[in-house]
Length: 305
Image (cartoon, rainbow, N blue to C red; front, side, top):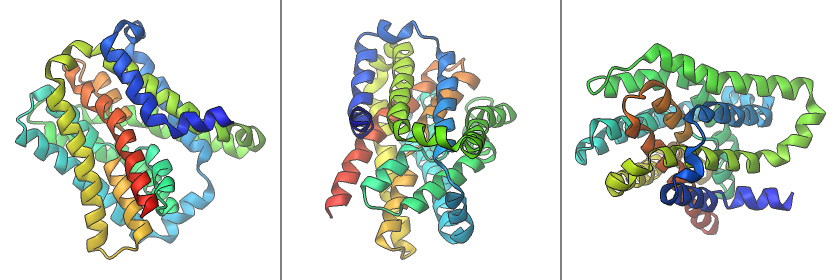
């Protein structure tokens, strides 16, 4: 249990270390094919299903205004911010597509852990993650089509089905597993944060290793854009919550939920549907590394305030 706690607590450091190893020594992960990304994401989403409870869905029904505000900010701030950054920095078509994919994805499950550590409204965070994830099969392909269709041909139906297979189906399976095998679920749940952290680090390692050459050539600019995307998302999410006069715990939850994306899904969609544009997977991999680091720092400062 102690090892599991340390793994989940220092996820950002671990992901950064794995990314550095994969970048400096690509052969450490490049022997693993990119098809492994989807099953791993499915396992992470299955774990999310195991941790969701009827009370989490009651939050959605009992606090529809809060959830609506959260999801509206999620699916407007991050996509528009992504599009603006690609224009300001004149990113290549491939990298711009990757940044837009990240911006159009739902909130990441790590946001719930960060919200808890930051003393934010955890119920709101979980409700927002669950709702944005359920909306993702429709909104993510639609937003990518609106923002990126002039750059590349976007297969919206294919993306919708991919999100259903990789995200929705595993969550439903997790909920069913929890319902019919509660004792087994109780034994598994304490280890899920650590397992998810390891799986995310593994996904980052695979993606970075397969794109190490491209990343070393134009990496600094992409890193800057990814960092700005995340930090501006956190800031604008908090500002939106302030303008709506939400209490402090809700401000923190909205800020973290908006700024932290399911970037692993973005990399997966890039690999599956935009194989002709290999650089499109890089922003998602970088975001996976950076948002865990920035999230840990944000949680530290919010917890102290």
